[in-house]
Length: 194
Image 1 (cartoon, rainbow, N blue to C red):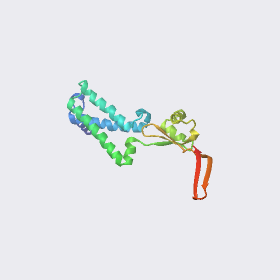
Image 2: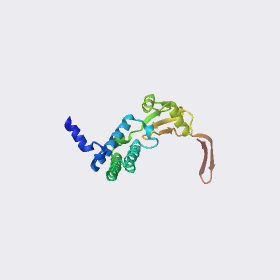
Image 3: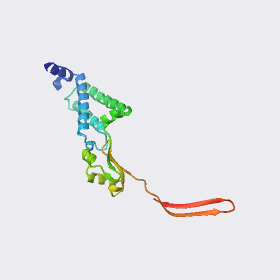
Image 4: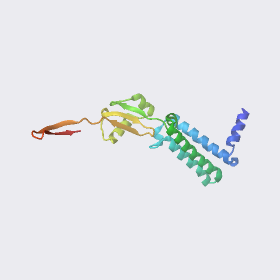
């Protein structure tokens, strides 16, 4: 057990005043990965607003890491290396998530269906912590009044609620055909409303 503690101290350092550039960089990456895992486990999409948790975490941690150089509590070189490493990891994960759907789901999350054919999927709404009132608000933003008119609704990866409606049924209100006998032409006029 002592060997594990010594290894951790060598890798991550023990006190902020004795950290070298590599330890600061390793700490930044470690905290980035742990924070990403915690936010995904917490599964709270509202925490990040209109952005993916993946992007918000970078902003928070990068700001925190770089702010330490402003007040002098961390060495400039090591902090800049840690910041660059965080940007590199973020870019790498984004590229990998682009090519791998499984990794994309792990890092960025996934959308979940909330409504199907005008009926709420209560279990999913509970898991997503979306109340009926939250859903009704999203429906009103789409210019609709009733959940029954919603074909499908989804809680997206960034926490937004997407609403899909059935395409409106056309109603034919007027149909008139004009036939021209000599030229054998036919003109049909139809007026429809949606």
